[in-house]
Image (cartoon, rainbow, N blue to C red; front, side, top):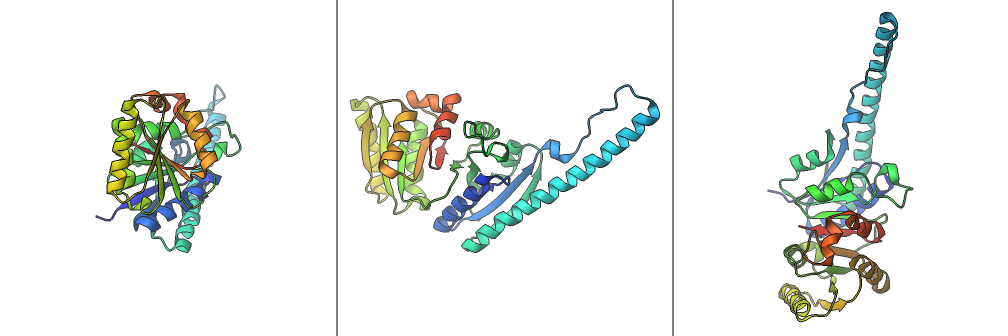
Length: 283
């Protein structure tokens, strides 16, 4: 079965970044891309009864007009969705990457669950169309997707740049080890510069965990750098990305130390909100 990645596009500014990152990933791994645009239930029709207590004849005329408007709105939403998919597909054609289009109706999380069985990765923008200019907020669907998908989730930053330097946040948890293993085994990361950092005290346990991560990467042909840094994870990781010039952050989606807080509450969204590079979450 052909390996695919699913790229979620909604017509926002971040859709271009999702497509560019997906094309870069697919090009390195020779994977196919499935472009998905999901029309929410509100876009799919269903007129509310706004007739109130007006007379029967006027109420019937109003409901008929509302029904006609709702039908037009639904058709326009479908046309817009197809246009978004066509524009996205053109990006992949220009990059020489095969992509298919998929227009879905209903709930976004359900749509992902229905189609991601053989997907290697899900890509989504950090913000959606409604919050392009609300920099203090993330897309309303992002947290739901973060909590529900089992596949690796790639959260695209606002602008694309080729990934050369990768930072792995490591706390010794099972999901952190899987994140290291994913980088070690995936063709996406072959030949890239990889560093592994543990945020916290430089204990013997932390050192041993980093050495295990280093050995795993070394066995896969990486010359990984490891280090421990003091501080709070969200502040320390963001500062490292800026100081060193990392292009990409890879993390386990849960943990057993202070990093765990990043993925069980609002701090998780804070990390992704402040991070200026794409983030891969591995469960």
